[in-house]
Length: 354
Ligand code: NAP
Image (cartoon, rainbow, N blue to C red):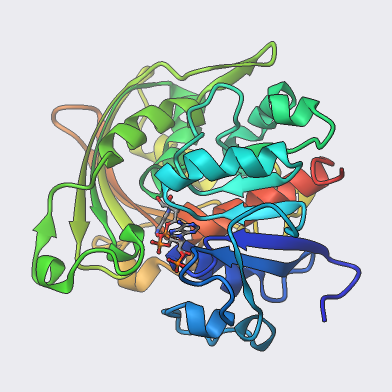
């Protein structure tokens, strides 16, 4: 039975790759308790353990295993919903939930670039939450809203760039990604396509990275978001790694900075919301690793329970100023963990109250 002290939450797309991560990360969460699971018509009516092809190394929590999967509609769903649906579906379904008074915290790209929808990484841009009050759903009686987290490929990079943009200014960014197969969902990329191979194309990924970077690093002025002003070019590749997106990045700064100053900016990176002690916030936002061959996904992905961004290999770039490697866990920091952290921020700021 659900406890009465925790906030009941639902997961839309609960059987998928990100949905499963939500189930795992919300087990024993101090504030939230999963009370509703929804997926496609194929899964609706089944017990969760029969509907989900569970792929995580921890077991399905007992209480969840026997929970019945609901249809993906607002009726009977709790107010707070974590969503992990394909963008085309989300485009249609997410506004229905917001209009019905739900606080929809989503991983899909459908509304990330909407001018009234915050694209939040609490550590670097919590001020974007103010955009919620401009949403028509929020102004209506139900007081629903949509809050998004970024694409998994820009998440770690945005966190790495934020302290540099703040201290030295950013002029240009060039990033080449090596993205894990879990980023493609399940069943995702066919094994015959990816084993022993690199696929130099991920649909719409480069466009999302480039657009979202400017919103994530934008600044609020008079309740409006001004996009950050720097040039960014991304090249995205799928590689045969299970979890963790690794990126090779070159940057040009507006003010000169030494390697020591850049590393100090990363090591000194303080979360904007550190004082709130949010349960899913990593103790260390960024870890800079001095070792010559790090970060590596297999060895470094679980740092900070998957919520810490690991950076390494800072060195001079002969085309731009500096180059480095960044690693971020795509289904934790880049998806479910990020959304849960956003929900924790929304709770503390009073947005989960009706
Ligand atoms: P996925 O593994 O393919 O899971 C998709 C989920 O959507 C499943 O629960 C599926 O339910 C459900 N679904 C499919 N058709 C539906 C329908 N007609 N009505 C209701 N539910 C339906 O995908 P994923 O990787 O978890 O990604 C989900 C979203 O998160 C996508 O927008 C993706 O771009 C985004 N995202 C993913 C990652 C990542 O690392 N994977 C990171 C950041 C963001 P059934 O099992 O019943 O089919």
